[in-house]
Image 1: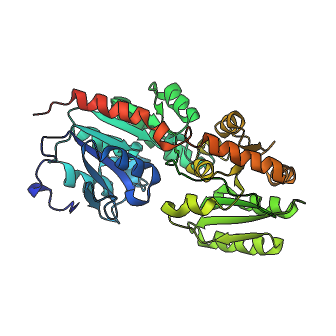
Image 2: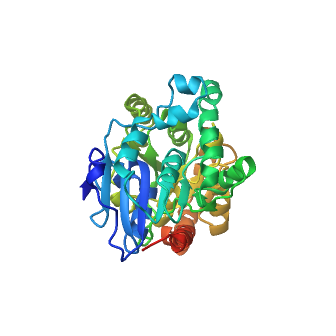
Image 3: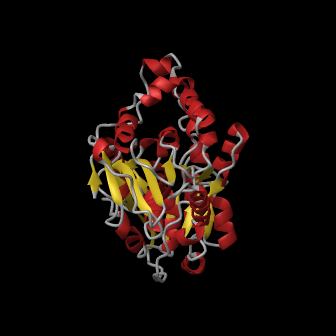
Amino acid sequence: MTASPRHDATVEPAGSGRKPTLLILSFSPIRRDARVLKQVELFAEIYDVVTCGYEESPSERVEHVELPSDARVDNPYGRFVSLRQYRLAYWRLAGVRAAWQALRHRRFDAVIANDVQAVPLALRLRPSGGVLADLHEYWPRLHEENPSWMRWISPYYRWICRRYVTKAAAASTVSSGLAQEYGREFGFHPALVTNAAPFASLEPSDVSEPIRLVHSGAGLRNRDLGLMIDAVGASTANVTLDLYLTPNHPDYLDELRAKAEVTGKVQVCDPVPYAELVATLNSYDVGLFVLPPANFSYRHALPNKFFDFVQARLGVIVGPSPELEPYVRKHGIGLVTAESDAASLAARIDSLTAENVARFKRNASSSARQLSAEESMGPWKEAVATLVSKADRP
């Protein structure tokens, strides 16, 4: 069911009274947002769930309020931000206004607000049990490599965190580093819910010859994806590399394809639907993720692709990340580079053998259940159950 945000006056309160009502609010296309989809799947059986976001409904089991595609929240760059009139800047965002009009006459027992942009609106809806703020990034330092962004936009997000996120009844985030920084700067301490993938009942594939390396993710220029191509090109190991990249920056993908062609060992592939990704990755041997720490969020990234690799029963090679390295070493699933550069990655690729790759894949398989989404979502379950228990329900 899709509700129009333009006809809110005729909408009845959500729910039948038999189950608590839960709003999952996200200024994203929820059906393509892996983290928010996990919330939908987790709670649709327990509560009367209403989702609000872009594009069509993420599930037949929920009611969906679809926001207009041109009603955005990621453009607070007007004169109000320049004048530091942040309240005016936020409440005039087209996406915020559309969601408010669609939801203002609804009543919910609890709301999950995905990312800082959703939290002020969630609080304004006054759910009787309270708001869980799920923070996918550390927004005040999201683009700290850009001095202009830090000067003008970072204070806006700090204002949202201080004024609104601190008032949420509960909070969660994606990595320990982000949780610690929210605690240090704003005094609240989000629970850790990683971007783990759902458990997949798979077996490790046999190690290939040549050893098949793979990377999947966004085709963003600032992720320096070319360093993986350079590393494979410089390596003396018998390996190939496939990159499954979404076309975020099409001109950058063209550059990567040209670079890959020179090596003769790398190809840039079209992305596959997320529902098919883990099964696709299962035929590979080692997943690569080396992300230069260009900013705070990149330094503390604990991305879903790492967990996708584990569910696909792959070994991994990662950069010296304070978030990823402990997982790799604890579970014995791969190698960590000395630096976040092509030379360090090439050195680790050169050390791969059929024997150690097979061991990494076996260890990934034995760790897959522990590192699955099902095992990571306990804090969400507990937080929402607590909120609902406080709700003033008829």
